[in-house]
Image (cartoon, rainbow, N blue to C red; front, side, top):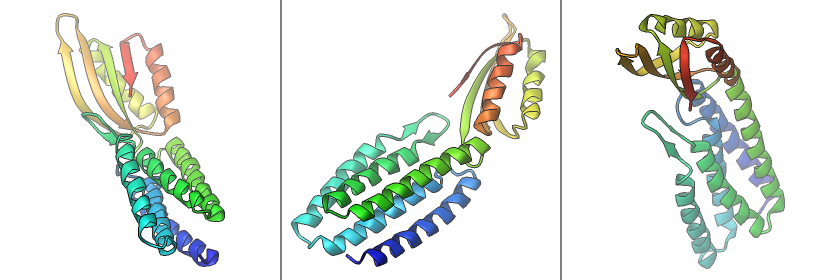
Amino acid sequence: MDMQIAVLRLLLTFFLAVLFGLESQRSHKPVGFGTFAFVAIGSCVLSLISLQAGGGTNLALIGSIISGIGFLGAGALIKTSDKVFGFMTAASVWLFSILGIIIGFGYYSLGAIIYLFMWFCVMTDVYLEKIGVGGYQKKISVRIKGEENEKELDLLFRKFKIRKYHLISKEVDKVEKILKINYIIEAPGTDIRRLAIEFQKNPNFLGFSLS
């Protein structure tokens, strides 16, 4: 395998996948740039390996490994009544199986490059989550004392500039005069943590949970 050509093809694939994935993440789609990058890199590497595998038994072995790990990766997806997440984790499991194949074939330099790509995606994803770019959503459940105090929740959302939120459900206990409200909110992780601290300070919020 000509390493220069292989690296060039990988870089082109990576660039195109990241470019498209970032736009998807910016548009708050559930599948972000990391998933696109992992799947694209893995597919590119499998194509490169297939040219060198010699056909027959080698290709059959690679196909069996990839298919088996695909089921394992699918198990990393988590579905709730409100959302599905874990796409990047599932894609990383699949890509690591390909990394093992590459190193097993003796392409150490290629394996190192892919490993660096993976770490770049992981660290960039952490940064994007911190600044609130993408579909980083949390489900928040709040128990509020008194129906009239519901407006305090909206005030807190505005205080922490949480503009993307929508109501899932609301339950009213007229005997105890307690509201139970469920929201899906989207915001930087730091703002969500500060919001949780404010909940603890406010005596009108009897309990809350984030998931």
